[in-house]
Length: 244
Image 1 (cartoon, rainbow, N blue to C red):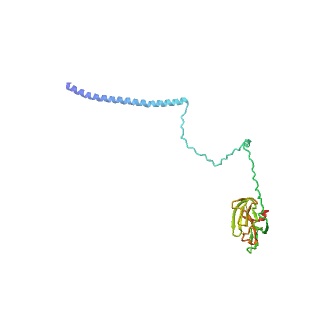
Image 2: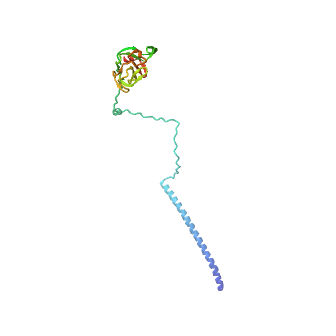
Image 3: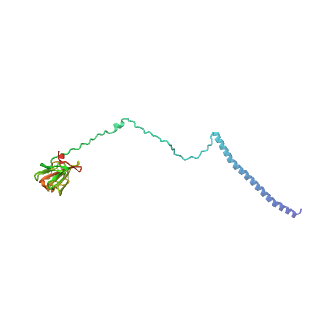
């Protein structure tokens, strides 16, 4: 073979040899990668087997834990009876508790009553029966008693109390009213204009509040006298019984 033929053959085999070498390298790389992959997959399996072996050696058993359910209230149709414990009487409570004293309310002290004036009774209490009024000339009720006395005679408070008012009444004349703070109220009318007390004054039984006069227009026919009236809780009562 001449030199020209040799050069052609070397060129052909030289080009094919390059591709063959490249193919061999690719196959070798694939084989190495495949075995490397198998090696990596085998390690976890071995670890898993070893873990199972350890669990078997220790005698432990794998248990599936169910999900925790929310708590539900317990409802019963039957009522629940709860007994209240009774305290045990040891006597210590009575010993430690301070002794209490019974406080008695004193009975209401009776009023000290005196006659407002000394004189003759000329008209009595009458609210259920009509009596003749000489001054007005008619028949009417009478809510007090009239005590005739000399003009200027001292008039006293029948009992202790507070002066409610001192007024000039159109029919009864100069009038003093006293509250005795127990439901009783006394009225003193036909007094002389100059009184001895003012509204708000505190008086005792026998305190002089004024003098006998003849200022009552409705009873002017009686002359100088005291018109004395008593009420209990707003209801007229017989002055004679009050004085007794």
